[in-house]
Amino acid sequence: MIKGIKGVKDLLPEETPRWRFLEETARRWASRYGFHEIRIPIFEVTTLFARSIGTSTDIVEKEMYTFQDRDGTSVTLRPEGTAGTVRAYIEHNRAAVPVPQKYFYLGPMFRHERPQAGRLRQFHQFGVESLGTADPRADVEVISLLWRMLSDLRLPGLTLEINNLGYTGDRDAYRPHLVAYLKQYESRLCVNCRNRLEANPLRVLDCKVPECRAITETAPRLAESLSGEANSYFTKVLMGLDAVKIPYALNHRLVRGLDYYNLTTFEVTSTNLGAQNAVGAGGRYDGLVETLGGPPTPAVGFALGLERMSMLAPEFERAKMLDDASIYVAGFGDQGSMAGLAALEELRLTGLTTVSDFRSTTLKAHLRQADRLACRFTLIIGDDEAVKGSAILRNMETKAQHDVTLSGLAPQISSLVTSP
RNA sequence: GUGGGUGUAGCUCAGUUGGUUAGAGCGCCGGAUUGUGGAUCCGGAGGUCGCGGGUUCGAAACCCGUCAUCCACCCCA
Figure (cartoon, rainbow, N blue to C red):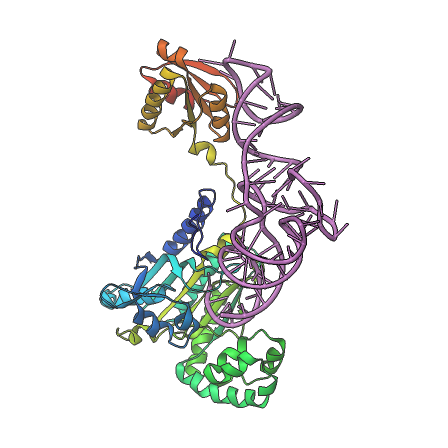
């Protein structure tokens, strides 16, 4: 048996209604906040991701689905949506458009990781990018959208955490302080953190090992090294969140894994998920557009994991099924089968949702299928009816039956089906 | 990439210190009702015990390998 690829899942018809609901909710909230859909390719040249996400990140180092195109250029299945969105923004010179460029996207992303609860190799993200606005209110707008959307879905156990990464210069100034402090306790740090000390010391701050946490608890804080400019920007973001009544918690350990973030970073986690507890996360990335060859452009955005939202979303009722398949046509016998097929087509052409199971050969089997498909009516056409040019419409709930004629069938059915 | 758990019917799972025809519940099909669904009763079908080796008189069970899957580390949505 040929099986699907590891970490790549099928969404069967039973689950697609819930996904559609999530997607529609996301779309509705995004457009309410003035974001417009952008559809970007699923693969891009590899260098786009390497340059934007950062060459020393795990994503670029070992998680990308990269392959050679036929002409030899290296291409990669997108591991996230920001890079492609920014590329499109630059390529189409959207900086020249006089209105705010606020985009949202929705679709599959690919990372070659070991699958676990809430982590797949093909997963789906909903994301927004607000490009060209340096105002703290843009940060607030994006965070607010994220929070309202998740709240509207009533996802349980949510927390919004926020931090200020400052400008690149601020982090450069802070890093030596942190490293000097951590060096004193180097022997007590976990192996990972000892490596991080060289590669990316800030990441030591969000290590989960208790010993490391204890050490970093009293470490010098990034907040103390931030420039006045960075501080006042962040203060305005927090004031804005207060003004629109978004509850948040400051988390000085929140250091995002992608290189392009600066100033505001935030993350929404849920206690009802497994170890991978981030539902959505984002931040400001003022340098990225320029890094990718565009004009200096401030930007802020977030991405949401749809699988993780789906894991949290309460069960939805399937009441709609009744409307989905409302009429079952039970055609059986040599002539009844053919007459049933014609009736099916005729009803469908008038816009009625009409189904049948051609595998059923007896009336009993047909009615059983009608019941399973939750049809409200069954149109019975056996050989007896077919030769008479008639059919029987059965109400599956009341068991009431009406005779109808096969000529001019659709109008008769329409009125019987809609009348109470 | 590393570690641990689990692979038996369509699904969820039993299966004793290794013992003869591998079970249950649910589901499915049929009958009771030769043309009327759901409920009930009766009957039936359905299994390379993940795969490959090994130990043994005998393996679903023990050993080795392998694959799949889940969870965790790492990292992230």
